[in-house]
Image (cartoon, rainbow, N blue to C red; front, side):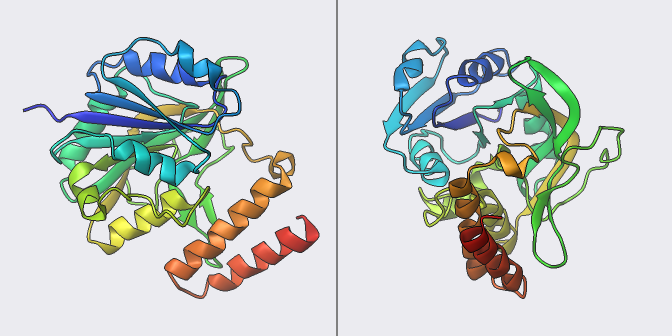
Length: 273
């Protein structure tokens, strides 16, 4: 029996990218059983009335409840029996036509994996073309505590073309085994996180509960990441939210790295770094 696929997309002012994301989904070689689009408080939700017609597409509207809670809301709409693949997908992430089929294959090849993902390539949505650089090849951690997307900003020379098991996977494209998520009920993502680091927290929890994580470079997709590596272009309020989330992550998964998290939070809050 074919593995059912479910896709959850959380939007917030995503008019520039959502239609493209859905059009790529609509061209997949295997169709998703359900595509749940959750609007988390877009200031002008008019663009949501012009979504392309797709089998199984459902729109759910909410206040600005954040990324994790938006995904939880979408997850609660699924009608599957627990043996499928749930894809948490950012609206600015575009999938090649065979991505879902390949992700199902990778998940079946790795029965101990709770989640899989692949090589995310940077994409310029204004020019509608790849930048030629990497966005993420798994999420790793420096010895002192900083989490980072491996390879971000580098040109792709095949330097990350080996299958491995990183500490975490990027939440822009997270393909999860539904069975691994079931113990969490309807709160797959920790509701204490409003934005940022909720993907890492989920990955750490999956690992704690005995599931593996797989990065497979055969899975290639494109991500428009709003701020890229240009931290100076990121509003201070978002930088502060990210610093708070990092501190929260260290509190929930304790270790000496909390010294880094506190230092980052204080620098961002009081010195606007």
